[in-house]
Length: 233
Image 1 (cartoon, rainbow, N blue to C red):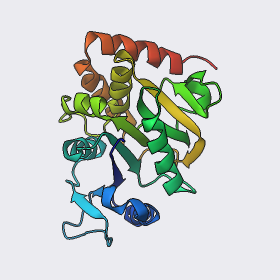
Image 2 (spheres, rainbow, N blue to C red):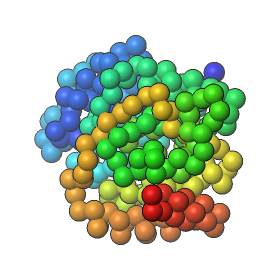
Image 3 (cartoon, rainbow, N blue to C red):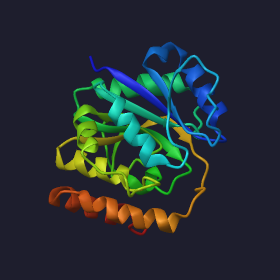
């Protein structure tokens, strides 16, 4: 059976939501951690859930790096606290089931609304008699990674990628070139608020530099997948 670690990503303005998600996942308390930052150096979320504090000067890439550094389980499930789900425990259970299935799933995600990478844009194929769809992108909002992908992501350098754009492209490209599936479970719905609270042009430029670390095969996978999701619908 695959072991699972859950990380909830929190920052100023969403700490209460992070604690609410953690409370909803109380049955998984031993396997759950809130990774957070805050401009108040003395602030700490009021919760029984394990906490890891990150620098408030850094953003998503630093928190992701913190998660993969601490994770020692077979599967890592990551949840951004600004996401909403009507049944977080069911999401975790379905994540566990998918990762325990015979199909070689490397990246799993729920169906997320409020993202450019909507399911209508990303679906490559359906799986007969299954709610899973094979996709070209999941977006880095709520997702799980298997151990081989976690190990690959530990090799990446995050220092010049403040906002973390391209992290999802890297782990998806690696999954495909490693014959691992990237799947979305259409039975689990998550909503994410549209928009970003930072300069997207800077984030995009940092992504281009970050993706320069891809191997030749990963780069080819990335370019094919990028063209697919950006095709006219």
